Image 1: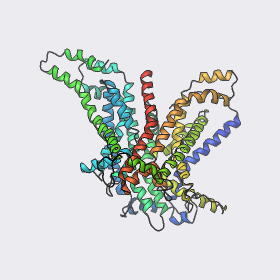
Image 2: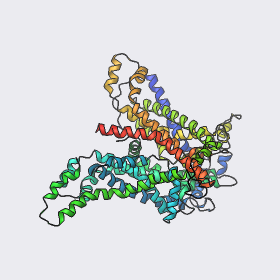
Image 3: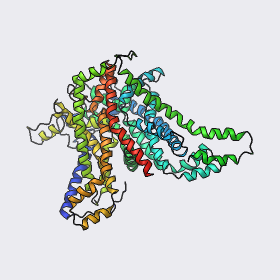
Image 4: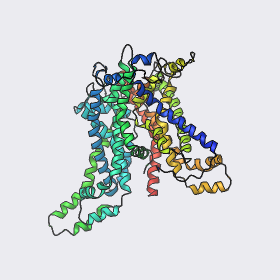
Length: 293
Length: 314
């Protein structure tokens, strides 16, 4: 997506122009308000939410809800806070992202520069795998994880996320390398360079942008996943999203809304930071997932 | 022409090293396939093998545990006789159509407005889009409390002095599904905006200028010339949104938990509860197969056209 708009040919009167700004700003508020309300209410004492007004700023600012969400809130049966689950998510996300990105890069390289009969069928099958509803694999996956002893563990979740992330990582690299000049690869081959040498010396050095896109895409997807976490993790290996849902739905008695909001912001923080730091690449990943090339 | 052919001359030059060339050449031919094979085998087993397995399970009387005894289409008959499944399908139809239409309208509208040489576009665009980076669980949690009559919008408007104001859809069996639409539209409409904006930026300005010289009004310009050129963007938006709608699971779990009662049940939540909590694995598998068929009927024609178009284009 071009950052600078090409000189649009549409001409508008000043009044219409003002109206457009009003509408756009209205929508900006609409998108921002929920995050702002979450933040504001995570910094309030509970009674200011229940008897006060959600939209009002705190009369008394407090970080108590954040501390509670992090280390003492009741998650399921344990009053552990979200901290252990935050760590679970990190321990799950890092290897899952690295492995699926490396495999995706190699797959994309093979599928564009070492084409073999049937390469487009292989690619088509991997592409379709991106879009299946995961409900169709839940039952056999649970059985297999049990059989290989990975049920209810973080490595089990890593395996699941690598497998079901492969389609997209391959798609990203395949489309990127497709545009990479094949002549360079041929020339290197004539000079006697082998498969891996060509990959590391010629393709990898210019793969920066697509690596960023893939890592961000995978990071966001794996971090935000709920279905696999809820299906395959046990109480000790649950990722952040599952723990947040437990926190919100398990509290009995008076609901600590402020702690829930702090927990929600905590769960959103890693992906939000990635988005703020590198939104451009995030969008590119989304678009590549939607429109090929 | 394949790379392997091009590689041969290079390998032939090295025939001075006697034993090596055969081995090396063979390795170079096999290595790419060897590198690709773990991923391909994984996809073959974990995607296609599992689809077949679940498909077969849907034809067995599996309950708590899978059995391999063939039973025929009994589970499908049971499934389509269950009021809960009809609730899920009806909800998907309501949710899916509203979600797709509203996201498209908001997304297209914002994209057209943003495309008018807007100052501050660089600030607005990321604001419209950031919800897509959030987990549906976060979105669901946030909106669960905004829509809660006790502390959310209803409560806020009442404290402003409009005491009779009521907005309790999330607790209302007939209206709860629309709260799922509200939260889902908030999350995804910015993304649709980005897709349409990319489409708008790809349109040749010369065509627009030519139409203006012919005296076309802005409205006519959009209706007759610009919107028809956005066909691919409409198609992509539809496919992405339809596929997200059919897969929707997390948002409902976090927002309503499928309730009140089972009023916001969707196929994905139905599948999960029948398989894992109600011990009706055969029926759960059948519902998963129906979900796959629904998604495939949207995705397969699209991918087929994309892959073919891509081949012609390049």
